[in-house]
Every structure is written in C-alpha cells, then in structure tokens.
Amino acid sequence: MLPPKTVKRHTKILDEIALDMVEHLKRIRNKDNKIKGEFDIHMNMWALECVGALAFGGRLNCFDPDLPENSLMRRMIHCVHETLALSNELDFKPNVWRYISTPTFRNAMKVYAEHERHSKYFVERAKEKLKSPNQNPDEERGMVEKLLEVDENIAAVTASDMLLAGIDTVAHSVISTLYYLASNPDKQHKLREESIAGDQKVYLKACIKESLRLRSIAFANLRLTTREYNLMSYRIPKNVYVVAFHNHMCLMENQFPRPHEYIPERWIEKGPLSHRNAHPFAYSPFGFGTRNCIGNYY
Image (cartoon, rainbow, N blue to C red; front, side, top):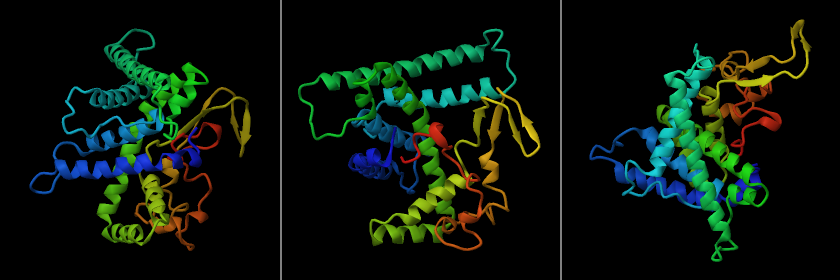
C-alpha cells in the first residue's frame, strides 16, 4: 500500500509538516526552554498531521495555535489512546465480556463507534474533494482518494486503519529515538554532523532501527496456523496461534551483543556487533510477508 515510490511523492508535504512541528515546539516552550504539558500529545499531533497527508492528501492543521481542546483532532488522538487501552483490557486480561456486557465492553463499543465516525468524516471529505472542479492535477492525492475510485468500502477501512494504527505507533517510535539520542550525546552529535554534510541519511536510518530494536511498538507477531507443522520435534496443530516475541529476540546477547546499549553503528559497520551476525528474523518490527505493517517504508 505504501511502497517507497508512493511515500517519496509525499516527501515535500512531510518536510513541511516536520518544519511546522519544530516551529510549534519552539512556540510552546516556557521561559526555562521546556515543553509545557505532555510531550507525547504534541508528537501525536505531528503523527496525525503526517498520516492525514498520506491518507487524505492534505493538511489537517493540527498545529493551529487556536486549536480548541475539544477539536476533532484532539478527540481523534484521545479516541486512539482509549481504543488501545481498552483493547488491552479486553484482549489480554481476564474478562467475562464474551458472555455478559461489562462496563469496559460497553465503553469500548462507544469508543469504537466514535472512531468509525471520525473515519467516515474524512472519507466524506475526500469524496467531496474528488467532486470539486477546482482540483489541482499536479497535487499528490491521498491514499483514500485513490481507493475511493476503486471501492468505497476499502477506502473506509483503509482510513480507519491508518488513523488507528498510524498515530500512536509513529509518535512513540520517534519519541523513543529522541530519548535515546538525548541519552547518548555522542550519537546525537554524529547524527547532526550527517544532517549538515548532505542528503545521505545512513546514520539516521541506523538510529531509527536501533530505537526499534530496543523499544519496538509491537512486542510480538501473531499468526494462526492453517495446517499442522512438525518443527524441530515439536508438533504445532492446525488452528492455533503462534506468537513470535521479536521484542525478546532483539535483546538476546547471542543475537545482538551488548543488547541493552544504544549502538546505531551495528546497522552500518561490519564486526562482532554487526546486525548481520544475528538471525534474519531476530529483528522484525514491521512483521514479514503479505501481512507486514503498511508503515514499513513510512
């Protein structure tokens, strides 16, 4: 859905959003040069603006200084946080919601319904944009606009998925990277030198990969077997869930030496620390195959 060529066509607007985010952070700093409020909320606003550009081909104006607390954008972020928290309560903790309607289940249904309303709002907005006679033919269209010309239902599901799965995950990945760079000034200095030198982002990519290795958003991948397997003397029956805890594998000493240290160089240089010495599937933050994460190239 988001191959490199597609993402590359959105580079200009994503760069604009990044610059606007920097100005936004400068604007909200206090006299002690600190960010007031929760930093992750601001990063979520940036992520929402980026997802909006990719999905809908335009700006959502999340950095508007006059954006009210009860605005649609802030409600969407709150809705995503609530959805993730409630999903954790219902899916991973002991619960009787499958048999009786519990307060947590009813709350989840309200939040899911609100998220669906948000998705429909943006789909309708994309439909109106397609009908507009004032469309700029040179403007890169969003993913949802393109899908609307094929199947409206697929477009609606895509909008829902991108809004739900793209905001918190992207924000926290960047927050983790910023944290590790702040905790390792030598790595931060090296990255800054690369950004000044030119357009090659080799070390930047290595920094992001190392952050995802240490603090992956999805701690595991889960798949349902479609047939029986015999693997190294283990029998895995059909129709059972198999979980690959890649978050644990990324911290194994025999896969990544000095596993708890932030060492971006392991993704660039050869030697005993090189990622090439690890099993190919020890690091898999985006999954693998046809069901891998659509944000892989993003």
